[in-house]
Length: 192
Image 1 (cartoon, one colour):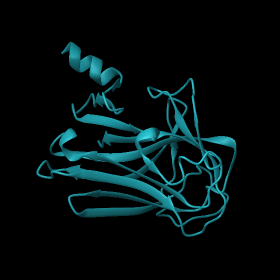
Image 2 (cartoon, rainbow, N blue to C red):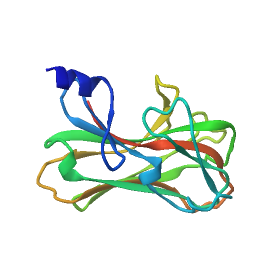
Image 3 (spheres, helix red, strand yellow):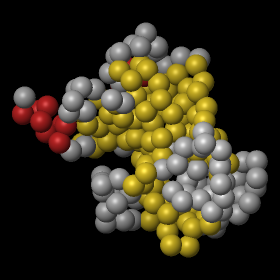
């Protein structure tokens, strides 16, 4: 019981970089993949991305800061065997926008894939975009910890899959300049 309370109370850092915690209501395993472990187009080019240290980051020593790109593409994955069998999950991009962010108010493509099933949706990184979007465009919400989260998609871990759950966000069609995104990582969390 003490271990459950500890793991459901706060995330722990696992070897390899993931953070893990248990959903208090269901006991399902939840994870965050840090920005450093995600595949980010141009991430190793300092004029496009930089790695910064933030004092309010939950567990990870650094976050990715978008300086300028036209081609925004972020992907990650986690092995399905790490997740709780029979549980519904959602993936969330956890991020902030700096005061001078720009170009992030157009819809982007979000996706989640498990066991050959691909789920896609339109999302917008700006919580209050200047442009009006179709009703099906998902907007972010403010979290209690000062970060924002944007739901990329949902899936059910049936348990018979033996492979990766892949997830991502891309805005590669409009090719306008984008900047000011500070990304902590992507959470894979039990969906109530």
